[in-house]
Image (cartoon, rainbow, N blue to C red; front, top):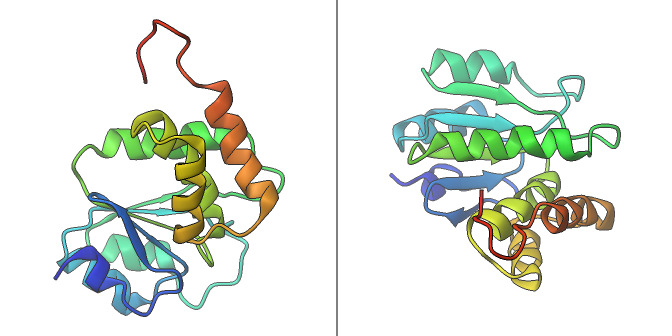
Length: 160
């Protein structure tokens, strides 16, 4: 089973990159399938205070996967939050990651800088990919784009 097969039925299920699978809120069954598919990290962008159908951190940890929560809210849509998200994705290396929020809207915005800075996509292509992932809100798009624009390597310097 592949990670993309493991999340069938998750809202906005997508595998935009070989080691990154994205979507909305998974069920415990999806998490078990992700574990079977080799996913090692679940990166949750939901605020811990958001209503959830089950105790996701406990479910992820009971499966032996790493659970990381980086809450994305109107108050936390800043560079520090994206630094944390990008830090997790960059340090994961080849370890597969499942990145989610409630609907994948925040996931799409948070991945724009990763797609541009780490994968070299042009702005338009990164936005199109983010929309395919689940991005719908203009403010979330601008958050990701603003970070990517301000963190682009200067001429003659290396990418992160």
